[in-house]
Image (cartoon, rainbow, N blue to C red; front, side, top):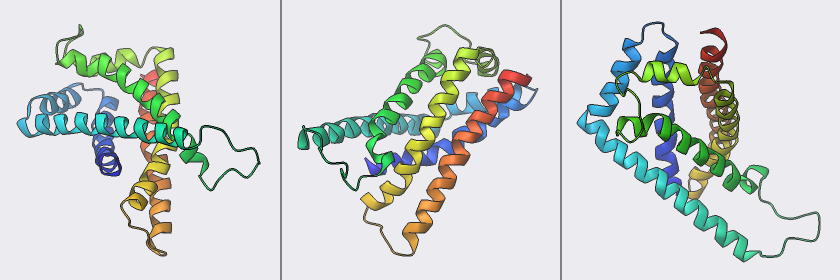
Length: 200
């Protein structure tokens, strides 16, 4: 699960960089990037790996959460419950919200590319701009990326811990990097959403 999560962590900055092309008044750069991502053979292979990583990450997350629930079917009585962090307790729920958004995102874009949903796969620029004109879509988008920030903060640092990479010097550094990553990535996506919604 940690390895799949790290792979997904590396994908998000690439996705964000491409999405910044939506802020350009010229649709050609974004549409060219989307076309490249949809047709280049190596990218298509990585796309399969990415979907596999997402499914693996989700499946293991559900399995681990069920194991945790079965291990403690009755809640703690005392106020001092455990050493588990706030973020760790709600990972399953932040993950569920992200999965819900992924389904929406796939329906609006990926399934269009596959021809399963009506739309023009050669003009995702216009499709994205039309979606961001819908207030409800922005509310969902911003809420999900806020929850993604919480998810990323715990996921980033705990992935290194899971892989046994704890160190008295480097672990605090990893936590700082995790915090910066968890703020900048969702903020970047949110910035694009707000600009397209309110100023374009």
